[in-house]
Image (tube, rainbow, N blue to C red; front, side, top):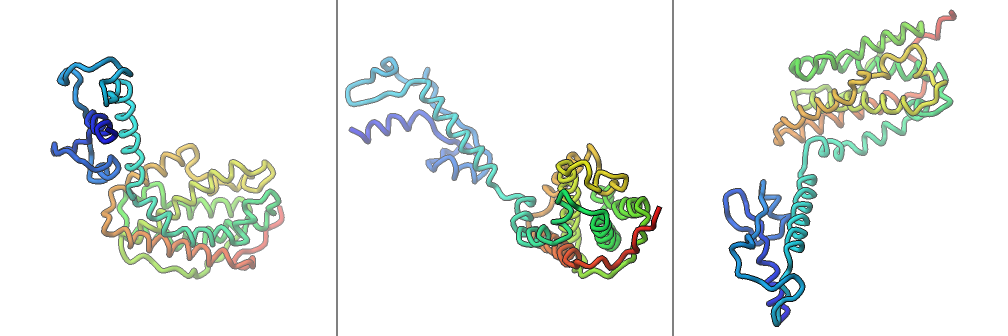
Amino acid sequence: MQSAMLAASAVLWRIVSTDGSVSQRNPERAALRGPIRISFTPFSSRPARAPCGSGLPGRNIPCRKTVFSRIDAAASSTSHVAQLVPNLRDTLKAATAGEHAALERTSVLRAFSSAGMTPAVYVAYLVRQWQLHRVMEPALRRWLDADWTDARLVKTQWLLQDLATLRCHAHARDITWDVPRSTAQAIGTLYVLEGATLGIRQSVRALPTGHPAHGPANRFVQGYGERTGSRWKELLANLAQVDPQVWPEVASGAGAAFRAFETHFSDDSHAGFDALVPA
């Protein structure tokens, strides 16, 4: 009796693939095969049924409301599975989680996020950023087209502007970095630089008004201003076009960039810049 009840209920909806074949598998597995549409047997083509809730002897016929509830549930399940389909952004985030966490633990970055950051440490932060960007940006231009780099690889100049405002002269230093050897690795590096721009912009908004990042030397930390979010979305749109076969190379480039930042920011000394010139 119970099996007959289940059979009568299950026949009212089904999952149909785009090629017209009926899938007997659950909606989540069907969704993984590709786009689907959900259909059910029209009531007009079925024999007359007893009113909802009454049923026939030995049966429990679901009503129209129940049928649509099942369809909504299947569609919701399909949407959830679509969100689980791997993409390059999530792949990079997972692959570089350890390097990212190590960078966040460096003393300079921890000081940057604190309310009591001193002007001297802020200068140290800007100098380290300049020393890294001045090497990375030219290297990326060798591999990336203009649609990737226009209006993005300009942060070296922003940092020089901030240091000039602070009347600080920075010295170039060698950095430890696995320079990109392919376009894919260069894309991974750009992902790190642009992600940092987004993160810094968001962090500065949460800092107290007395923080040096709210002072006159804030060109770098402001990123693209109100366009920072849209620029990040543009980058994600470009990432979506990258061939999955080179995703490991992209991740390799991103990991190398994170390690370069972590190594350079782990130097707690203030070597590499002259003291502030008295006003």
